[in-house]
Length: 420
Ligand code: UDP
Image 1 (tube, protein in one colour):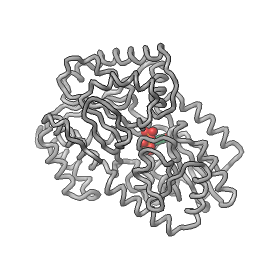
Image 2: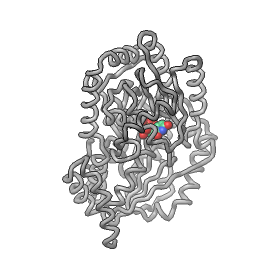
Image 3: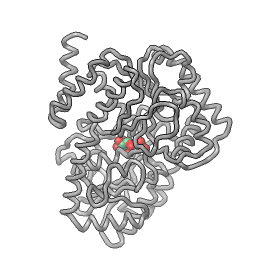
Image 4: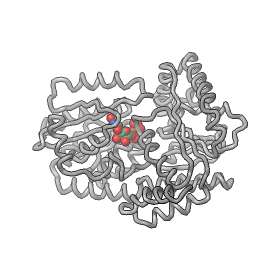
């Protein structure tokens, strides 16, 4: 690498120092040194929409800046492929439904086609990260692989629907390692399993500091009243995110407290159910002018950032959640979060400390009213929430754990377990 590129990389990394401290950056550089020149490929099924794409967009430039040759490949297939992988996603999160043989055939065919398209890059790689079940069957097309292949599961796989797990397990068993976000998501697999929590990038458009005027501009843009409290849920229109439960909670709370609700979402190109769920949400919101159902473009990061900062409470009332980056994002903006008592939300929201965990719309409504009547508590919880993210869920911590894992795999120390 020439000196100009090295300086550029150092400048890129140094931008994080004011947030994380210089020693964190130095530590990353030390860890990355034995990996210089290694080729790492990440494969998933969408470049935008959802948490996986959000993380890869930020993680890959940082790995590159550390001298690791990192690339990102996306697999895509027919509508049947997406229907199949959405069923896998639902089934791994416990919503069981048998998947038809035709859909499974589409899954296998897409993986076979993509294996041919990506053969060169995947055969050359030293490390391949396969994200979630969509590209999981790729590995079977590389019997003579030279690199280490790692399956990175982002979803709550703690109670998978048995028949789907039975189908997927043989594809997964051949990997060199797998990574889950929480220990309880790990599954009996014949290789090393690592626990690494996801993260947010504090410098991204989604999370960076914004001028007050830009935050205030969202009120006019979406017809919101700055004088009344605002509760916000940001998420894909997905049943696991329980947007209908959020509306129910809002309607209960709004009976006694003046309140506005924003549901901000968008689609992910690998999610075929989004449109149907959006329509259900729009129907439920009909006749309630203070419920704002927004369909945002996939690059609306600053708008989401401004909405999160403009809100009084962030809600993420999921009934299953691998991690919930939207929770981390809300906490980073100093907001108390009312989160569904499930999966990765439990790792972030602590009752009465950084927010509240809830199980029902009634519980969520109760906590909305409780918080809305206590401005000081909201502020204090929000400050603790931001600090908690600073200590645990920034991209630099995520990167440190990935680098440790890669160094371990490179040195043949698969037994090592990284706990986030
Ligand atoms: N997101 C977005 N636009 C939307 C909905 C979500 O940019 O319309 C982002 C959101 O800010 C977060 C990510 O997508 O960064 C969602 O990640 P999360 O882990 O909360 O859920 P997932 O969609 O992966 O289940």
